[in-house]
Image (cartoon, rainbow, N blue to C red; front, side):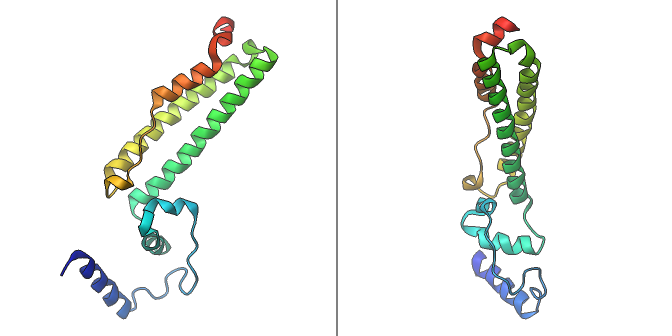
Amino acid sequence: MGYLEAVEARIRDALAAGQFSGLPGEGKPLEFYPGESLAGDNWIGFKILQNGGLVPEWLSAGRDIERAQERLAAIDRRHADLVDVARRTGAWSGTWLAIRGLRDQYEIHARELRKMQEKFNWDAPGRLSQRPPIWVEYHLERLDARVSSPLVAAG
């Protein structure tokens, strides 16, 4: 008996024993949320596990990575907005500390995200589930280039 047949046999036995009765969401249609695409073709199986409170750690880590990416994007947008205001108004000296603070926040969160991605890739069940890690130095250079020479002259 192959692996898949063994799994299916255990599921059938558990169904017959009533082990799937009374689980949250029983008798209701499954709702699909965009973040569940992490599981790829196996999303329905992971949805059932999630409903039973049994989501694999690597899949939960994937959601944490998505939230960290959203936080990083928000910091990036605030940095871009502040640089734009400074560029339009010429108020570099008044915004320098805030711009630098956002860059520092970005670096801290980006390095944290990189560690999360590396751990995720180590724990993921296969190469296709892995995620390319963020290239922190590239993004820091991008933020620095956004500021460019007017800030250097003002700083």
